[in-house]
Length: 292
Image (tube, rainbow, N blue to C red; front, side, top):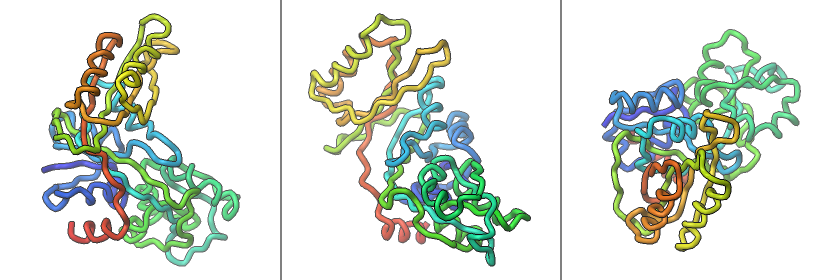
């Protein structure tokens, strides 16, 4: 199986991919952006892609949400991975915290480490990268030794950087949810602890329709665990709604609710029904990455 992921080497997306049960059978290829990783799935160059969807501290990853809700309906979620994320500040060997003028990282990582940076490196400029590992690679390859990166310990090892501060995130138990995205609908069997994800549009419908749509779930005892809005691009105030709910589409209460939603919404696209993933603990992950 060929699988792309948000690269380069050393990203949390790579770690999420390595946590998959069949990781040893996967031919993994990094891509520079979420869009590029998912484009490979659309074109058939890759069977699937592993990309970040949301973080427990800073919420949804916009690049992934945009790809899933605002495209042609050709992508599906086949599985999810919940991964603890711990951020470290790293530099070229021999540099110190006092030398820093710039700190590179992904926007989500910067947001989670902002308080630490404000206290310990208040004069350093924050510069965004496409991923945490891309930031680490830039630091390793760069000529300016006063630049640091916020990334994972795996990235520090991959690019021979020195960690000068560990676990600098705002929350010590932050978790990021990654999704395995394919271009083929695969109905996973009911596990008893499942999640169903869909995208709904109420564009052009009467006032109050969105409330009516959401009530179709509560009326049948289906718990909505997440609601995200994303502009359709047609006009101001027009949105897609990305919904996560407890349960499997083959359960009658869930399928009945979705059928009722289809009758009320402008469009409804089910992205997938799949087992809710238990958080991968660091010790288990290190063992799996060592065997991959």
